[in-house]
Amino acid sequence: DIVMTQSPDSLAVSLGERATIDCKSSQSVLYSSNNKNYLAWYQQKPGQPPKLLIYWASTRESGVPVRFSGSGSGTDFALTISSLQAEDVAVYYCQQYYSTPPTFGQGTKVEIK
Amino acid sequence: EVQLVESGGGLVQPGGSLRLSCAASGFTFSSYWMNWVRQAPGKGLEWVANIKQDGSEKYYVDSVKGRFIISRDNAKNSLYLQMNSLRAEDTAVYYCASRYPWNYVFPSWGQGTLVTVSS
Image 1 (cartoon, rainbow over the protein chains, first blue to last red):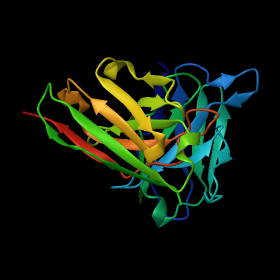
Image 2: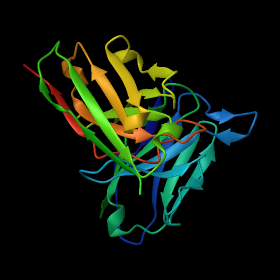
Image 3: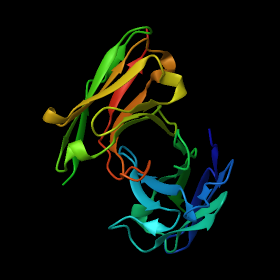
């Protein structure tokens, strides 16, 4: 199975500042035949199910604010919140779907400083 | 609006069985692969199983193979998870989730149902 490792485990950012979460996969999730990275990001607020934010490493799901962006390729990826809002307090997970079973990172908790 | 509503969770003793259900509405259920994803208390997410639109293909994470059975009834817009030989480590919130046709990306989730395995 592909192991997904996120860093940091938690971070505190001031309102309006940038937050960046890193995600590393134990093997490449870049599929050479279509040049796509099989990597998604989810947001989970307390007491709620996860919400899909980004797939193909950088494609925002419909309705997701533009302050959320994804980047990276191969084994190293990042989720950036360009200007943190109070409603962004949550745990964020990366997930690979390159191979079965799909696997998630351990999560990164984002709080307000 | 897509709605997925899980039910059937509860407290069960180790070695026992439980059947989870997920009622779907707001989309053409029979056109989608469907999944179960679980989350142990205070922990991360773990994909458990999925089933093809017509039920002809089913896949499971290794830790539940031979113990859990996923099924669906397209006439009732419902997804099920029969869980047998339950262990303490199966304790989790179980989410029903749809999947994009092209791969294991989960755009819609239910609110989840809690399964607690304890004596």
